[in-house]
Amino acid sequence: MIDPAGRVTNASYDSNALMTSFEQDQEGQKSGYYYTYTTAFGSPVISEVRLAINGQNVRRAVFSYYGSSVPFGSTGDLQLATVEEYDVGGAVWRAVRRQHYRYYKSGQPNGFEHGLKYVVGSGAYELMVAAGLNPLTASEAEVANFADNYFEYDSQRRVTVERVYGGRETTSLAYVANPTDPGTEEVNVWATKTTEVRPDGNEVRVYTNKAGQVLVKILEETATGNTWSEYWEYDEGFRLLLQASPSAVESVTEPSGGSTDLIVVLRENEGLLEVWEYYADSDPETGAVEGRLYRRGVQKGSEGAVETNLKLQYTTQTVGGTSINPVAAKLVYPVLGAPDEEASKTAYGYTWYLDGLGMPTFQILQQTTTLPEVSEAQNGTGESYVEKTVYDVFGQPVWLMNGRGVITYKAYEEATGALRQVIQDVDTTRMTGVPLGWETLPGFGLHLVTDYISDSLGRVVQERGPWHEVQIDLRDTSATPVRRVQYTVYNDVAHEVRRAQGYMTGQGVTPDLQVVGGVSLTRLGANGQVTDEIVSSRTCGCGPLSNSEALPQEKWSRWAHFMYDAWGRSVGIRVYHSILQAGRGRWGPTIWRLLSVMT
Image (cartoon, rainbow, N blue to C red; front, side):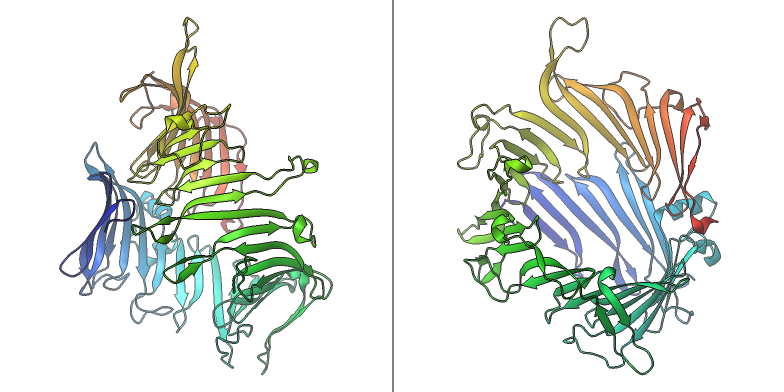
């Protein structure tokens, strides 16, 4: 398949019609996902998904499944999911994170065959390994002390119990169906009541309609009997009409005895209600489109007047008999009840790409935004400014013009979509492909170029700012052209990110890159939370920042250590004021965050 941008997409399949590769090629930049399968319960299942860019392995997800004689799952249940990163230097795959799953087997209580029982997330997995346990073979009792999630079910396979944080917090759920069994057309009649008992013992009762939309939500503090209730109403198209906050709900009478009635009484002149109204008809001249949101407002109590705070108008783009309706104008009312002419109006205009036959499409080429006027009394100019954005065929903003007419250009990597270059205050005489009618205004055109270098996952690893001249050394008799550089180095296997600032001199493929000042190290846990923030000086003046450079503890000048429990909840922060060459050193007062479940 070749899209309008010339990007070639190839999908390959095996003899069983299973996809084996999905590749995209844009001007020689190729990225693709490659799939490998294994057999479980007589059917093929994915065993590996691999990402490669220009033929170079980047990452892969590896999946393993239970067999027939394993006690913690049935044949074909997912046992382990591992994300790995390819180490080019060592030509090996290295694990980034692992997640383990266990299931109910046929005949076991509180569940059903293939029903998910335990989830051991990446952080808990590493903690089990550190404790000398193999998560795949550990006993159920051992896993229960570490698992992020544990579930029990009723006969309809609905969750009735969830335990988190190694069983330290338990939530129970119970369900009641309305015996009248209302139809889907009865949008404001409850069909299911769900009662949630939270870990603190307080209770939440939720009534939903046949479509699963919430009608009433009641939070009860069981120790005092105090309740806070919210209420929602919908129209026959399941669109939201009204939401009443607890301050607007006078009372809720729940079904009891032989009654199935759910009665909500709203306060007439107190409490916040939000209301929504939709267009009943279409009118291109006024921007009305049947069924789309017309206005949103608030009212004080059920008898209060509706005060509009937002109105929307639409335009229409039709392709092949199908229409879409992007917003053409948005009116925001800074003063409730103000007339339309006093509202802040933002207008949107669109031009659209044409296909290869010159026919219209749904892809935006240019969006023009006319901003509301801001009066001098509100520190504005009293004028309305226009912003323009031109998109490429991939939907990425490429050309931007702000309200002053200053132009910005953006370019992207074809393979990953990462930002590659930004030119601020463009001099259009130095560019090609400038949108028709766009040109640099007198007094502008500094043409400030920032280049970005990204890794194979699309993350920026170098930001090279605009060229400028500085005196690098006091002994220099002339200024040197330089670019300011911000470095970011990712080590996903070690869960570490390094950052530094510096500069670049020289051009071409081998410029001179230097680091100035200290290096910031951010160390992460397996759950992605920050465990250490460190500032270190370098051991050498060895050019750009890298993962291989040693940053020993004796070079550290700042160190903050963040402490968590096994499931990633913060329990303390320790800041060191004396850092030894090895070991913990001395620290100031530790800030502890006490968790009730840990006592």
